[in-house]
Structure formats: C-alpha cells, structure tokens
Image 1 (spheres, rainbow, N blue to C red):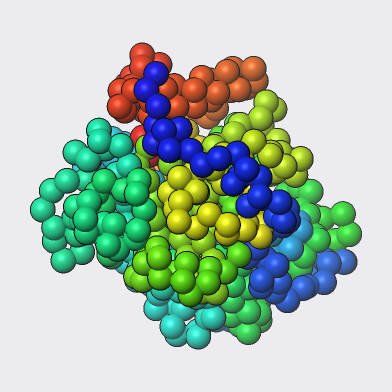
Image 2: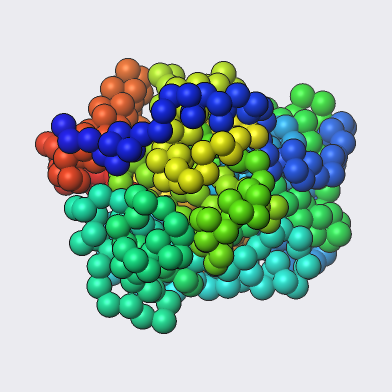
Amino acid sequence: MADIVFERAAPSPATVTTALAGTRHAVFWTEDAPGERAEKLEGTVDADLVIVGGGYTGLWTALRATDRDPSLRVVILEADTIGWAASGRNGGFVEASLTHGEENGKRRWPEELDRLDELGAENLDAIEAAVKAHEMKADFERTGTLTVAIEPHQLEWIEGPSTDDSVYLDETAVRAAVNSPTYLAGRWDKAGTALVHPAKLANELARVARERGVRIFEHSRVRALTDDGVQTAAGQVRARQTVLATNVFHSLLKRNRLMTVPVYDYVLMTEPLSAAQSKDIGWEDHQGLADMANQFHYYRRTADGRILFGGYDAVYHYGRRVNPEYENRPSSYERLASHFFTTFPQLEGLQFSHRWAGAIDTSTRFCAFYGTARKGRVAYAAGFTGLGVGATRFAADVMLDLLSGEKTERTELRMVRERPLPFPPEPAAAMGINATRWSLNQADHREGKRNILLKALDAVGLGFDS
Ligand SMILES: Cc1cc2nc3c(=O)[nH]c(=O)nc-3n(C[C@H](O)[C@H](O)[C@H](O)COP(=O)(O)OP(=O)(O)OC[C@H]3O[C@@H](n4cnc5c(N)ncnc54)[C@H](O)[C@@H]3O)c2cc1C
C-alpha cells in the first residue's frame, strides 16, 4: 500500500508526546460556555408538546413550535444537561446540506436534489436570521468551507471553473490562504457553511426557549412513553404531542432501536496561537477546513485564536452502546496530533489544551430519517451522521409538520417519507462496519480505488463517500 501524506511527512514521536503532555480530557466548548442549569422534573406537568432530548433537535423544535404558536405550552426533558452530547462537542460546521453532501443526495433522491439543496440553503439562511433576530452570542461566522486536496489523485475531485460562491484555488493560492505544505489545491465553498461555537449555540437556543416560556428540565431521563405523554423516574408530563429528539441514544420506540449506531469521533483543541503563529499560517478568512480522503479531518479556528482539529478515526465498538469509556482512546489522539503537525509543521511547540470524543449519530443513509408513531401523536428524527448542526433545524420543522397532520412540501419529500434500512444485529453490525472502515482506509492508500466490498455497498445504497 502507498503511504499517505500523514505517513510520508509524519512529525517525530517526541513532537506528538510533548504537544499532548498537558492535554485535559474535557470538552472545550462546554467548559468555555457552561450554560444555565435547570431543575429536575418532579411530579406532574401538563403541556401541549413534550420534547425528549435537549440537543439541537429538541431545542430547535421548541423554538419552531413557539414560532408557529406562541401560546403553546412546551416542555423539554433532558436526561443529562442541555447540549452535553453531540450538540455541545461537535466541530461547529453549520452546513446547508440536508443529505450529507451532494453525492449522497444524488445517489438516493436524484429527482429531489435540486429542491433539497434549496431547502438546505434556506435553512442555513434561517439559522443566520434567527441568530441575528435573537442576538444569540454564538460566534456565528458565515465563512464557508475550504476543501483541500492533499494527494494528487484528489485534484480531479475539486478542479474546475470558479463561480462567485465556489472558488478554485491552485497550489499557490490555497497555500497563500492557509499555509500548509500538504495542500495541493482547494475549493472554497463560500455560501454553504457557517461556523458556530457549538455550546454557545445550544445555550442561546435554550435561552430564547426559556424567554418564550418553554419549561426545561435537566437530569430528567424519560423512561417510557405513556398514553398521554411521557414518564421519568420522578415525574410525568401529560401532553397531547411528543417529539423524540434523542438521536443516537437508546430509542423509546422499539422500531428505531436498530436504526442508528454510535461511531466515535475524536477531537483536539490547541491553546490559543500567538500573533506570530497566527501570521505564519494565515487563515485570515476563518473558513472551516476539510481534507478529502474517506477518512478526513475537519478543522477550524475559534474566536479566541485556537485551532480545533478532529476526525479521521471513526470507531465503532461492538454492542452499539454510548459509553464514556470509549472517549478515552490515546491512539486516536496521538494520530490526530501527528496529523496536525504534518499539516502545520511550523506550529511545532504548540500545545493541545483539550481532547474529547463524541458519538456520531450514524444511520445507513448517512442523513436523518423522520416519522411518527402512536397514531401520529409522537414524531421523531434521528441519524444525522455527523452533519446535524444545521439539519436539526430542518428536522424540527419536519416533525412539527408531521404532528400537524397537514401535508406540506416537507412531508411529501421522498427523503422524508422513506425509512432507511436498519443496521443488522450483532455480531453482523460490528463485522460489517469495521470491514467497511478497513476498506475505506485501504481506498485512501490506493488513490481512492474502492475494493469489492465498497463497490457492493455502493450498489445497494449503503456505500459511504465522504
Ligand atoms: C465529535 C463530533 C463532531 C461533530 N461535528 C459536526 C459538525 O462540525 N457539523 C455538523 O453538522 N455536525 C457535527 N456533528 C454531529 C452533530 O453534532 C449532531 O448531528 C447534532 O448535534 C445532533 O443533535 P441532536 O439534538 O439530534 O442530538 P444530541 O446532541 O445527541 O442530543 C440528544 C439528547 O437527547 C438526550 N436524551 C437521550 N435519551 C433521552 C431520554 N430517554 N430522556 C431524556 N433525554 C434523552 C441526550 O441526553 C442528549 O442530550 C458532530 C458530532 C460529534 C460527536
């Protein structure tokens, strides 16, 4: 197998060890913006709508429901604290795509894709408008994504003419924008992505919800759906309608238990760069950055001058559990640190301050699925597959449309009406997912060429193409 650039130009082991020496296992975002805490549900509360889960899906549902009817009595029940899970520990890339990218959408819903793209762009605009209208302090910046080719075979994937919103940068231009010796070319999609501080966004959504009278309860895990709402260990909410916004966690609906699997994604955060270090790398436009392999990195600046560097390893553990023990994986952090210094060798000496991981909400179609249960009283959306910061707002609208019982453009989309295939039970799930991951790594080492397993998965619509 051919070496990839991260193997050809790896830093010394000492560089990696030194940079990780002072790293704390903690999520930078939630530490930086802890948010307001809420009481636990005790006793009986009556509401019109009860939302299970206080990540972006639940929070946007509360906002969109009260946009539609300000008098609606809405309750959010969160098992832990608002935004503690994926919503507080992600990369903060707010993407317009509702289909996990163009290729995935084209393969599954070709006849709908143009409209899905428009709806996704409208959704991103609406997020920006909401941030402005409610003066959310969430470090929202509409800077776009710069996708970089770091191996020669990737060049053809991004070459082509520039438009106002999609600018091709050759080797000289891309390195002038962001100074990495690994970059061979880049494409800057200026319109389709914004960056945000993930935990601040969750906190600000919760603030606006509270200002509208939405009642939020933390440490209130819902144990079961009841005939007239939901039940926790210490209380119940009686409500006409229920939204399940529990994403990758154990579903309260049996039919959804095999629909998502947690795949662990690992992240490093550096300490703030000095003025000289910042000048050295450029990156003045603060684009979100992503390289192009199947196993790719995503990275970005923060408002206080750090760099977040995540991705590459995507680890599935037998038994499909969300388990904090899986977050401690030294080899993944070492690999990320090594790849960071391949990307920015001039930053040698910079320390990482935080390391953390989170469960990616993977579904077999790589984007969210939607539906209702209990005679239309319960709606759900889950399975955003690592691209839910923006798409959760769209999902909130879909669920509210479904609960309304009215046909809308959204409810009539094939993407909304179709359910994906479930993952198989163990041991088949672990064997299949890990064989796929192994094959994707092989493809990255073979100039992108896909082996027979990946081709077979592509043929039945289960192929992953980043
Ligand atoms: C490391 C990492 C990086 C990522 N980077 C990006 C990115 O840059 N861009 C992007 O678009 N996406 C990214 N994602 C994905 C994105 O964060 C998620 O798709 C999105 O946050 C999903 O929001 P959610 O509200 O559906 O789920 P979550 O944030 O997981 O929230 C679900 C909530 O439900 C609660 N819950 C579960 N069961 C119960 C119950 N029975 N009772 C009460 N509460 C319950 C949980 O405690 C949790 O708080 C990333 C994810 C990870 C892990």
